[in-house]
Amino acid sequence: MSDTRTVTVINGDGIGPEVMQATVRILEAVKAPLKFEYHDAGSEVITKYGTNLPPATVDSVLRNGVALKGPTGTAVGTGLPSANVAMRKQLDLYASLRPVKSVPGVKTRYESVDLVVVRENTESLYAGVENIIVPGVVVALKIMSEKACTRIARFAFEYARANGRKKVSAVHKANIMKLADGLFLDCCRRVNRDFPEIQYEEVIIDNCCMQLVKDPSRFDVLVTENLYGDILSDLCAGLVGGLGLVPGANIGERCAVFEAVHGTAPDIAGKGLANPTALLMSAVMMLDYLGMKEQAARVEAALLRVYGEGQVRTGDLGGKATTRDFTDAVIAAL
Image (cartoon, rainbow, N blue to C red; front, side):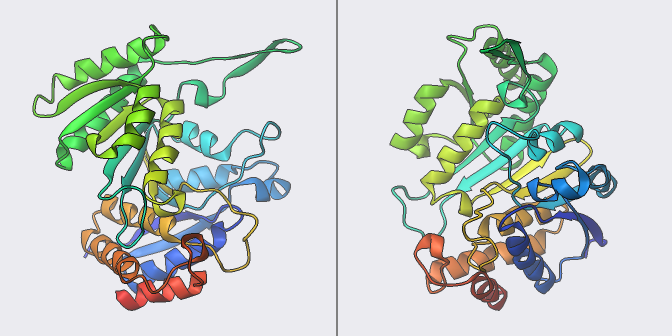
């Protein structure tokens, strides 16, 4: 068995504490050799700390090298910058990894979806570098660097090679943004030369969205810049039933944060109705990342068994199970 690892746990906002409690229960039930160190982040702790990302939280993630994080809220158009964006910048979590796979027993328009979105996580318009030039005129900067484009391309190709993936699709808008997205494509092409066994293609972002909803099976690994990747990740989640069913990871050279990619669902927060699947699947990714392969496989198998049997479903999937009901079912399936 692996040595015990300490994981920074960030409950987040809204339903975050509920889905985190459920996930930790399952990790304890599978006897994963983990210790949990709890810290805060999100909009609900601003009054306590004066910030949505306390320095102690960042220090904990750096010290432990890995974190499990619930959803955090961000005000639209006002307030502090996103805690998620700040965390990715401060920890240099340059690679967002979003596997999207059909879940047994969850009926959608598509069957056997199995693709991965690899998103550059630190630059582009999504980084939020904005300035008011004069009243009524705002400039948002799309910053792209050769370093960031090259390392996200290499991450995507290395992931494809390590996981038996056959094709990498670089998603861009270089027909219009010839310099910024052109740089991204140049970096992808150079990296591709080191991976001759992997097919490579380039797809314009708008066409990529259309092709995904027509036939997602034509894609395998998609690599793209920050803003496009944010949009594509949610679109792809919709192919398999929504954000409540897909995991997420933000990975850097020093540490990694595994998180649910859905929202905080304030309308059901505190009612015990939330579906913990997304965070639990993110925890499976975390176990795998930590080398705890046996525990990862067991949790995933138990989760998929519950879905395959179709008897216990939370309200978001048309069922009546509570968060505790669903968690108990997964633990029983272990």
